[in-house]
Amino acid sequence: MGGVKDYMNGKVAANREQIEYHVEKILELIGEDPGREGLLETPARVTRMYEEIFGGYSVDPREALGVTFDESHEELVIVKDIVYYSQCEHHMAPFFGKVHIGYIPSGRIAGLSKLARLVEAVSRRLQVQERITAQIADIMTEVLNPHGVMVVVEGEHLCMCARGVKKPGSKTVTMATRGTFREDAAARAEFLALIKE
Image (cartoon, rainbow, N blue to C red; front, side, top):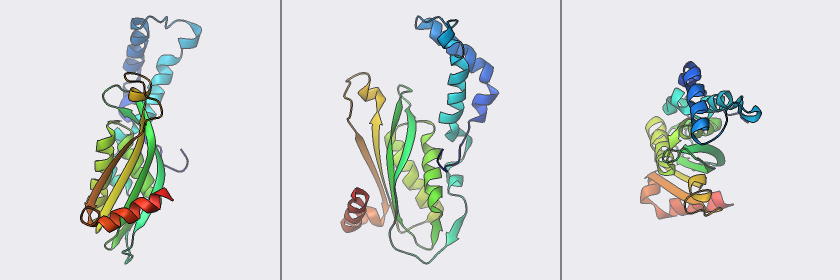
């Protein structure tokens, strides 16, 4: 997973047999033959996929930030273009995109890779993009107590692109601001300019 810790859902593993049974039944109910060659292993494959894509349920996202460090740096820190994949809780269809996180420390910093782990822990669940955005900002605020946090999430939602209104290529952008970024338009503008570079 490109250096990001692989969170795996232990509950899925513990219920493997039941999940495989129900996937097989769904295949039958949509008009498929689960006994045909191409589908023989599909229930097992889907179950293994669920272990991975729902791995966020197996971790407290606050713990994803790991050990934090005392550091006197109090200038803007940005990690941008963190790729995420999630599942829409309304249709169980994938959505994916990039997360951009900026914060102004007030004496505590986190390892930069830990921000990517936080994104993984929050997004690998049934989610909505608005909640992902707010949860990342709230957890950063709670764990690091920075002067300010700003999170921008871009997403392409298959529940909108491949079904329903069928508008492929459309993107949703959500933003959360905490502390300094909520109060200071210049700080917001600086963050937005830097993530566009």
